Image 1 (cartoon, helix red, strand yellow):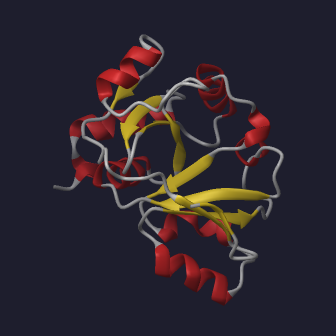
Image 2: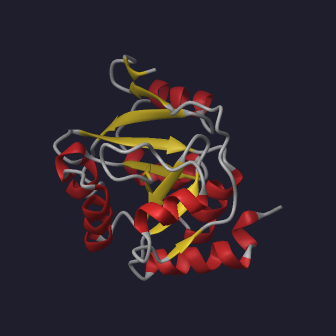
Image 3: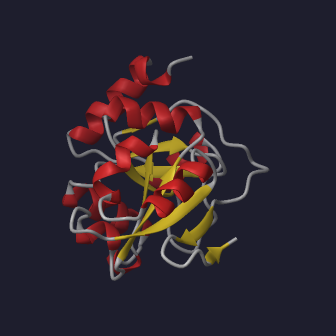
Amino acid sequence: MNWALNPRIRRLAEQMHDGGVIAYPTEAVWGLGCDPFQQEAVERILFLKGRAQAKGLILVAANIEQFEPYLAGISHDQYAKLEETWPGPNTWLVPVNGYCPSWISGRFDSVALRVSAHPVVAGLCRAFDGPIVSTSANPQGLPPAISAMHAERYFHGCLAGLAPGLVNTKAKPSTIRDLRTGDIIRA
């Protein structure tokens, strides 16, 4: 199925373009997403989660091409590392090059990027025509939502919509690596 053509997915992409916050299934947990260039939408996610902006947020995309502006300035070898591990459960901390909004990178000089293998996530990013914010759907200190009902319970009345789909409850959160050093930050 081409999720990017699904009417619900297309509507959710429109809602993100209009500044809405949505919930959607990722590989391991439900996530909250929005347009990363709409500061008010990002601030709404941070408020809903009780998360400090300084911590930064992950961006997720359907393919490496959607991240091209964020990757300007990295070496050929670094680009090859990204291509080898994407799509999949690998989040890379990529040096900020002036393209990423500060409300996404937080206090860091890098931005967390991941190309998802989840068909709904990839479909959302294709329908949106670019990367979206991806942070676990839970208020800080509570377990991440693992179902649409769980996400709705946490954020009842605060979301523009919920995507169809499921998570793999046996999957682990993505590995986080620093692109500059290769160091594993979270396994």
